[in-house]
Picture 1 (spheres, one colour):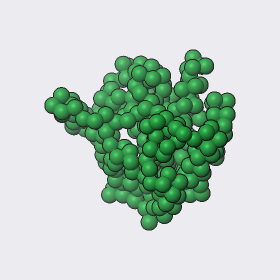
Picture 2: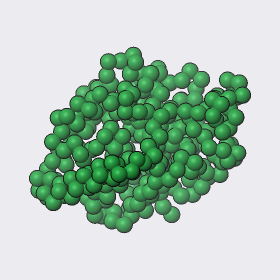
Picture 3: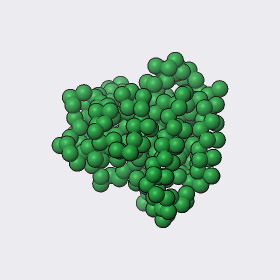
Picture 4: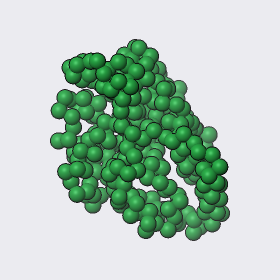
Length: 291
């Protein structure tokens, strides 16, 4: 039996905050989630940004407020169940841009989403160690999009650094209609909404530490109880804002690696250059990051 991790993104680079969120669970538990989710949605695609609008495939535009809240709480209960661990990493976009300007290796972390995705994977790896599952076969799944090359490079390099887990980590990219990606859309979107609201009331999230936990912003949870139902038991663990102290620390580790192994830097620069050429030749479908 293996372990699966599903991630999706919320927000746009011009927003004050972006989020990568998802969950970690065993193959068996993922099977239960898939069954219950498809039963709840009747096989239709759930997308939080469409919920309550005419574009919603569920027909939620015609539902009253009580029905919508009850449905979202039902979905929250499907994913927030025994054996599931929620993960979300959010980043203040302005602060991240300032970090990149000062970084000697901005191509490593990449754009905001890529840096956020990297920290999300690291959070999952920490969680696996805490659960005693680091030796498991783990499959990471992200939504298909134009960031997948950057994410692949990052995950491939991470895999090389973890020799003890060689051949036990894999990653792939699937469309949003994939049932087991849809709970990640809900997790990322709800965390993003909390922090978008909080950022409008606060000058910044920086607390002098590497992370600020999601529960710190509990007063910005939705009053209908949906946010609480989704994140209860998880918002003090691996759901957080990644502060610049964390990115600076990761950057220093990377700088040391490049100093000791210059060929790694050359390979990464070559990959980055080739990706830029591909973007100029063909415009890919952008990764959905809106909520």
